[in-house]
Image 1 (tube, rainbow, N blue to C red):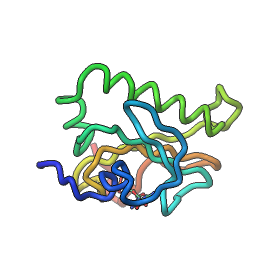
Image 2 (image 1 turned 135 degrees about the vertical axis):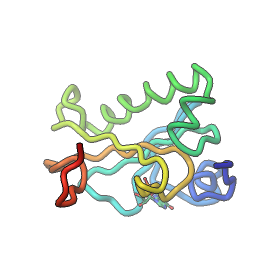
Image 3 (image 1 turned 60 degrees about the horizontal axis):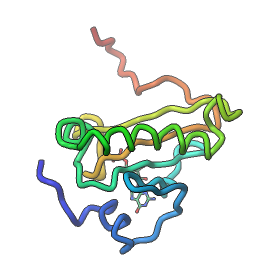
Length: 129
Ligand code: 5GP
């Protein structure tokens, strides 16, 4: 999929739409999700134009990939949700594509925390092998 420069996170990165910022550096922007699904729900996005993790892993520079990964733990520590910062831990989710219900076509990781988060995914009756 080609990158859509008019997606909502591109507009947030350009400052055209406000966000509740948590952290920013050369590689990433982190802000609170507008419809939180846990007591703490942060998003972290790369500044580069990548549709999803597949696009990012294949096409981002090593600096971007390292910068993005380091920022995840930094944000988790800043929010106090990582166990090493005294929190109860967190779940990191990156939806990619339609079966994962990715809504916004700019790579983003969700950091969810603040309560026991239950099973990892919705389970249908049928078990997968
Ligand atoms: P996805 O389903 O693509 O993994 O998640 C997209 C997330 O972006 C959703 O959790 C949604 O609430 C969040 N979101 C959508 N539009 C906005 C917005 O304008 N601002 C913020 N902060 N979050 C948004």
